[in-house]
Image 1 (spheres, rainbow, N blue to C red):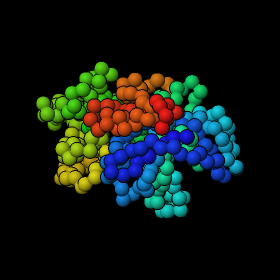
Image 2: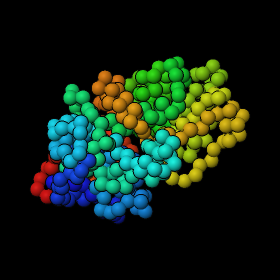
Image 3: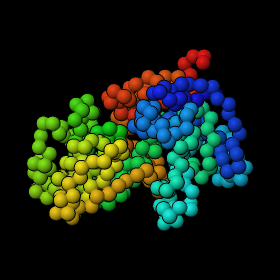
Length: 343
């Protein structure tokens, strides 16, 4: 089989690898598609070198079919179509004992802290599997993980039908949050400086704003009749968005921090105090979020054609990473079984 491996120095290589039989409690998946995301870029750029073991077969957004079942595995069979919730928690830390296993204090995020999905045959713990409907195409099913992120973010916000919602950041997660929020009946605007992304999102019927050309506070005040937004999602990772988020929220409104900020940011705590705002973090997902993501994709509620920019063979993964680095692509999928030539 072949795999894509981050070897350091901003380099990813496609290498032969020896498949192994699944161990007890594991299944072996023939991986179909893997989505690339911002976390994968952080890995390749070396920003996580203190965390990852190299060479690393990365990737955590995927779909595939079970090819072999290890000992003591029940409820799964060869041929089942699955995705993986890539979280392996210890079950013993204070977070786990409080019921928050998804943010275990010793979490193994599969695809970062241990080998991920960018390999043609992948052994994973059976308890990470999530079943896929037979009629859901495997390319679309590779979006389950990022949709689950959006579902979790929206659920954390506790938004309700009719809420006014502002999303900062028009990348894949921002677009998915906007889509899920609309499914919950929210009225959504998305703040995004990139013209190409705004055009794509406008075509989906989601209002976009260019922060360089309008006064966001004035616009939101007019839009909400002077109240402010019920919920603001910060998905961009930009310092300016963090500063703006609290200024747009209504009295007792909610600001949800979704983006990973690599450095501390200035937050207007005076505004948080004055309007009694809720400032929430939202990280990864829980099993219910994966189940809901599968349902939304199966129902056609997510604009998958707009989200998936391109599909490339595993031997073209370097090209895919270069596309992501331009910031012009949404979601790029790797067809893991596709090899264009001899390696």
